[in-house]
Length: 497
Image (tube, rainbow, N blue to C red; front, side, top):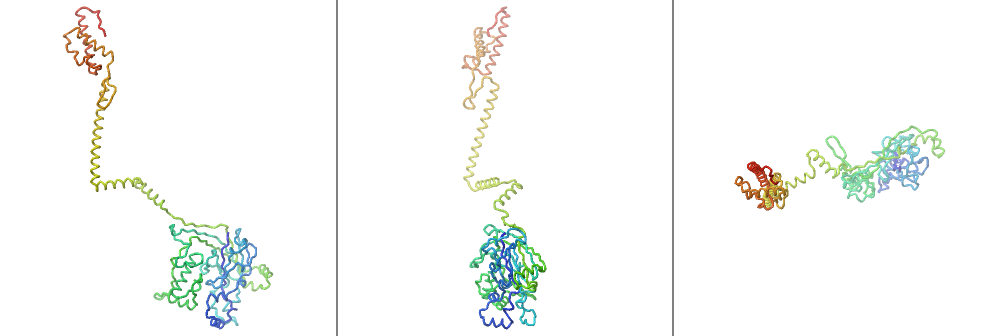
């Protein structure tokens, strides 16, 4: 895991030896008309070698000041330890979890340099004191970001050992064009800044611009880009009192600009810390440090030294990614699913309804459309009538075919049919009946065989009715012959069939 940046500040930002009394301070200000608060803090603060006494990573010692940069914060002059900028690869990362593989730093508070100690020879006022604490304030933060120790710092007092376990969280947010609200760029009015974008940096530049627009200068705390003129403490007080002071009834409050145009970072890394403390340095540690540098007396170390251990508790990080809750495809799918569930509808149904209502509207509006539909309906009715007639004829034909064995084929149109020729036996019977009737010239059956039933006049075919008549005539002929034989006594003669 790559080490984050570490910013450390002394609660005592100004060395008493630098300002020996209020008169000397006033004399310094009078002799330096271009005096700035930032320059004063940087010159009057502690040097790096005075603060950092010992640094190591996993037991391997390295030069703290070679990898530390001075920085001006609201605590005065501080130092940011940038291990990832080192040319030594082993200083960039921690290879295993635990305090033994992390960073260990021994710090010197130099309490003898405090103001307002009320000692007989101390006549200075405690105007450069940071509250009620001794020791240091440190902050673990993302690489190349501005440290804000007031809100997020960790405190350690002298003669104390602090253990800070780090857990890493990474946040990936959606930009505005992907339905998100983050940004990777400064607003247009702050585009001149060379600092990497972050919401905190953007807000600092926003406040610096606000003070500059209203007061002509900005407090050094917000001038991170160093592009605005800085206010002196008195100018800062006057500016705040005139532009930020708001009084309501019996209360007074100061409202800074909200800087709503500064959005969250689209990609950011935060370090959550879990701290524990131990009271007092062991005798073994004190004597070991004394042997390393004899100028570090045991009493001085007990009174001023503090040890900070910073390490990763786990060699993993947690990533939080912002995703679009509902895409356009999912919205359409949900609408279609709900309509299908509750209304029984689908896209096809909606299309059909749209087509139906559009055609209905077309009929109402267009006269030609109505005439066309009327003609179409008339043709359809005529067509249906013809179909019914054909079906009726087919039904009659089928009933006729069932009653007539001689009609078995349908040729041509539905109304036409071909008469099948009769069998030879039926024709022989008809011919025989006709011949015998002519030979006998009997008057008893003068109307049995008519021209309609004459086989010679049926053009090679008869219908069932004719055949039935022929069979009846044949039976009558048989009866007639029998009767005739009985009358003549000629019983041995048989008719030919």
